[in-house]
Length: 86
Image (cartoon, rainbow, N blue to C red; front, side):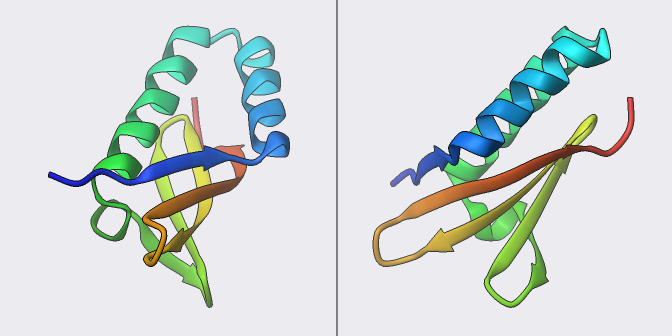
């Protein structure tokens, strides 16, 4: 199986750190971020849902990530991250 490269924008990484420290649910946040990485490396088209032109979304509570896909490069870029629920 060919995997995809997942790159997190710096702003998304900073947001992840803020969520991790600020929610008091660090284990859930860590697990969700790993699930997002794993799913996007496996198949971003199958695990993500279209959000708007060129943007996709994936939710693994308590996290929601917005990302783009470059099929030619097999590259996924995580652009932003937010909390969906805790």
